[in-house]
Image 1 (cartoon, rainbow, N blue to C red):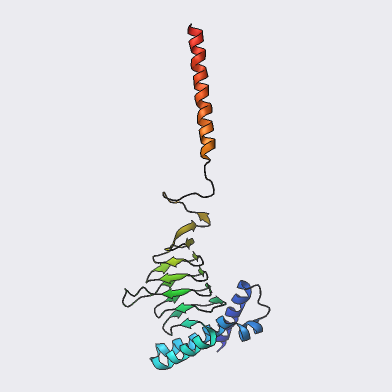
Image 2 (cartoon, rainbow, N blue to C red):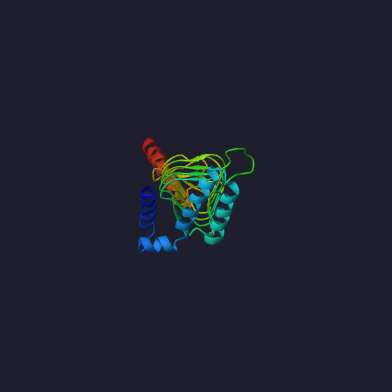
Length: 218
């Protein structure tokens, strides 16, 4: 019992750190749907693991109706998961989530429909999944990774990386931009007129030198 209370206290403290609008642990405990979703999921997961599958689904469906967050009772969730806003989040049966993660509304940890057995992603520790992001398939998202809002992730994301786009690609590694050979740099774009002026100036200098040499020879 003391261990469960300690874990709940850690969860509430995580919300206070992550959410600047949170004023007290009591407010978080009573009013935050993400906290309620995790508590109901712990109950559903215990029932699921002890083969009370129907009851487990009953609890998870009540959780969905009450919070707007759908977590399959078979999903594995670590400690101090913060679900911000939460409405529309879907977490599949074989999904695994590490410790100290942050998930925003509308995110999906789902499958592609092509896999058997392990069908959903494994999320590492301290991972952020932005609003509306879709992480689909039985691959791993490494520790400290960031999934941008609206991204559709279909393959593994290494640790300390930021994935953006549809389909997602790695945009940052260890906080630094990652460039590819076919990338278009839309910030440091060259001015073609300036390039032409520089070329003309160089050509004029060459012609002047040639004229000077011709005069000296004559």
